[in-house]
Length: 277
Image (cartoon, rainbow, N blue to C red; front, side, top):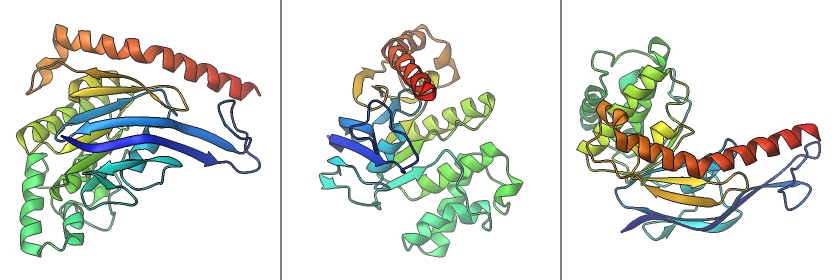
């Protein structure tokens, strides 16, 4: 069963008078980012989007989340048109996006407050999520008192504590060091595999991260983005640190890179041409 359906999604941005559009723009004052994306995301699936920098992956995620509107086409969640933020969806950004005046525990409680959940229940749920992500003992710490990895744990726990049907994640581990990044990948996938398997759409530039997490990897082209290939990741679950060293992991990584490398080259050439003009 499909949870999310995107039909012919297009997006153009109007530029300021002082800005120049690139060759792919349809008009001198517009830049085309998405060119008719069609995608179906299965219920309970972990889907990962990869593509060159600037290819519009995050814009597409924002459209799914109702944070921006498409210039053409439409996105549906459970057959209902997305025309704004939905209570069914939760978003984890690349930046930690925590409230600096709230403790770790009260940051996690925030989404549940908006849902009208009573104090006792939301505190109990928040503490359970802190335990799942190794944050027990840090309930009263403010964001500035936490490491980057711990702050992102709080952000993910805040999103999951709402029990969303759709979880949107925009490069949530990109700002972290490699050791913390791998640890959080393993914590995230363990939590997802052991839980109700929320439908996840995850954006990353890391092929290794995509292969480790995904049921399917969607490779998008250089801007304006179209879907180039959808790759089924045939790695058994549950996945753990040993998954990364398997021959199957290497084979899947190769498939994704073969689909992606030409698009990365195209994007780099376009960037060089734009800089020369």
